[in-house]
Amino acid sequence: MKRLVTKAPLIAAAIFTLVFLGPHALGLRINTSTSMPRGLYRAVGDTLQPGAIVAACLPQSVAQIGL
Image (cartoon, rainbow, N blue to C red):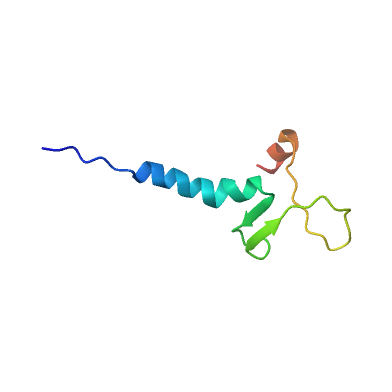
């Protein structure tokens, strides 16, 4: 009997890279949550203005309080 070789793991890794890591490397963020409109957002380093959308990573000590 011949062993069936599948390329599914390689294809899955390629899709993950293209969909999630590729845009992130280009400064794009994918929002799938309901906290704000879903979609693709571009990160820019402009000066903050009222009404701007801001994404921030909390320090571990502060994030621990939220858990």
